[in-house]
Image 1 (cartoon, rainbow, N blue to C red):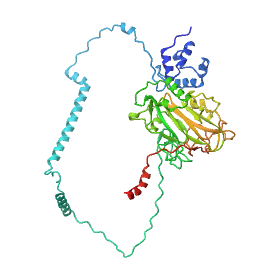
Image 2: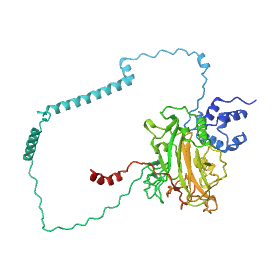
Image 3: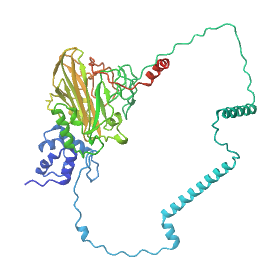
Image 4: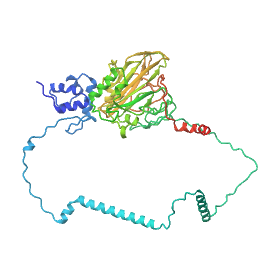
Length: 511
């Protein structure tokens, strides 16, 4: 007979969303303390066949401190039942000896809080006294206070003339500057004003260890520093721009599954979160499934999905919902990007990518890629590309590369034809998040990565742009690939400050 399930083990596994394995560990007489010392091979021998679930268990084990106390993984707080002590109630404590009596000064010195309180009040009283005395002396210097101005316009004009005359008499006459006069007109040539760039949007995503702050001024010809900066078309923010002035970008909204649209908690749990996302994908990507939940007031517009390994709270920051009434905690959120694209050439393609935790792509009404840690869509995983430069011992890179860049299913496109595309990314437990989406064309010979002999694929892009250097990104083709064309309509956006300045002369003439 197998041992009963430990409540602490069940709660710990529920926090990971893997509560179904509690019975498996109980069947093998594995306690929570023994589980924390198991390896990947031990977990597979116990019957845990899912590679993703084994990796999630091992990652949670690495996050546990060396102290005997067992804490829930990441930000999830497990609900565990603690039995009240029985023996403690039966114990009888022997009466202790009465404390020795203190003198008056001894009692005063023992009351440290009373002494501190008296000192603070004395300082406050001295400061208030000084302030009041200064104000009283300043008021006494005023010998006359004028009343309110008269309502008669003629009298106000007379008072103004008298005041200006007195002021003029009290001031010394300024020295007259020497002047040079000429009877002819001279021509002065002024240099031409430089052309001012039109700012399309600014979305700053800060990330430690990624080369500073990346700020984008548009998908084409923008300014980039650190972050996702680089050559090509300029800086591309991690989650998208605030405006779609160039058109053709994917439009994305952030949903918080933990709260309703009127900011009430939904008491969401990992299992329910996964079920909601799976139902959304299985039932045709109907966005009405997310209507009960909070939605970011404003969208972001992105031309690529290429997000390095970073803190999961960068998504709420990018969507400007990380504070105030619209605050979104960095877990159990999803971001849905939608648009229309046209292939640069006809042929057969497939998406390749990875995300921690969710990355699902639907193209032309068909699910073509499920490349996250969790199986969300019924899409077969046709292998993966593993890049050795990410493999380290016991770090995030080891976990990140353990899954590799997963292959999607092949699909055929015609040049010049519009296709609908939807991309779903999300984070369940919080902590870290990453997502990258590459594109591979059948029959194209891509350059190989020298360390792993795997192809370096181009980023799926709707505008030119290169990310900055980072050890948390997979190798990709630095020269890029054919740029797909976004054909979604340009939504109305707020007028930029520079555009407002340009329209001022026309508005003045109209008036």
